[in-house]
Image (cartoon, rainbow, N blue to C red):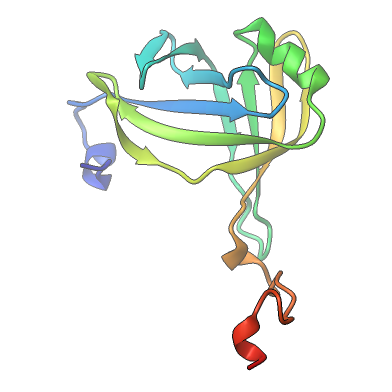
Length: 152
């Protein structure tokens, strides 16, 4: 089952969906898990901390694939992470139903989050897609080790 456009645009709500946001980095002992809601949620065996999240999608300009995210600092680890992280982290978005939170309705590919900055109130960063298909030029060098079929 997936989130249906008719459900999103309907006049009455019969199912309540929640967005789970998971931020991971090699320096974090456990990922930061936040739900864009006013209540904590236990889903997929983890407790997701309630909080406010603001997501600004990429503009419609050709080639601009960057989005930005701001997450309310609901856990002291978020502020500490913003100060200590070196290099990009990853962010994963999942959509679940509130009445059945262990079934993921929609799961988006893992994305990179860079330019992480934060303070006592919020953590912000830039989200960049990892999809090689969106690259304007191939990122693979053609040589005997990477493409042996071309050199028979």
